[in-house]
Length: 403
Image 1 (cartoon, rainbow, N blue to C red):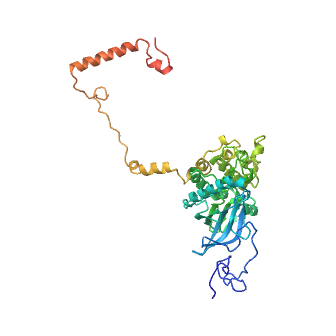
Image 2: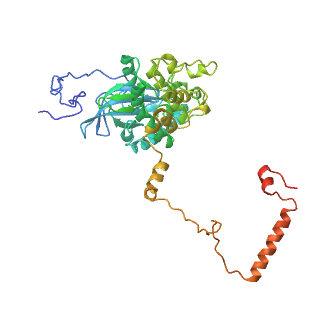
């Protein structure tokens, strides 16, 4: 049996190819067609470990490839930082270079953001609704993020087959996404490109948001953000180069995704709704939805950002009510610290009462005659001052001085 190399590994199943380029495991014939010139060549090995396959997709700031981790034999998805407006690839080489000196600063800022985000996301491996980042490194004049490979289909394709889903089905799909986004926002990370084609339904019944941070690379040189807009899903502030963006930006996109899934229709584009807002409520389209859920959804879809929810936890409570599982760290800490005190009976000191008037008995103190006289003088002086125009009870109540 021949030694396994990057040339004879099956890119479909990680099996071994024969001399005729057929896999002995899955029996598929190897696809040796060349990749586009600006892509990494198929069968490139990165970091002496990752065997590159065909591209899964690409956008304005990166190319995502299918790959095999030769150390584990597991599939992976590798995202390469490749801002098409600023860089090019050297022919017959993996090296990425800046295409013009004037683009150097913008490309450099984007690369640093890409690496910083990779570091942040690699620490967050417990978020059920976000793709897991396994590794990241710099090479070839650019940077790479190694992510888990998700074997499944996008929500967009799922909806194309189903046309629309029930509210219960949609909320079940979206819950891990919204819960994970709540935690991501706390770290200052905003997705800016949430839509059904970036939500993957895996064969293992998991739901994952992908392409995290793709839109965060926008505005590197102060230009408009429209190059990364997902039309129909973007709120109006994304259309403005200086629009204030934050968690509320993702909340609008989440709202559009839910609306589209339960109605089968896209709401009017946010920029058009600024002039005439004729969005139709789901209930008016025959959708079986509770008043609270619809009220929450429409608030998430508010055109003006300041009237939208400010964080995803508020949206969660509105959509799922008391069944919301995710809690803030403060709430968790309070519950933990108060664990023992809650189980103890609350007792209050009961004042002693006299048999005659049922009033509390004041504890007498032994005061010297001199101190008593001094206190008596202070009392008299205070009474005299009050009678000179300081507000009494009713004066304090109504803000007037008693005459």
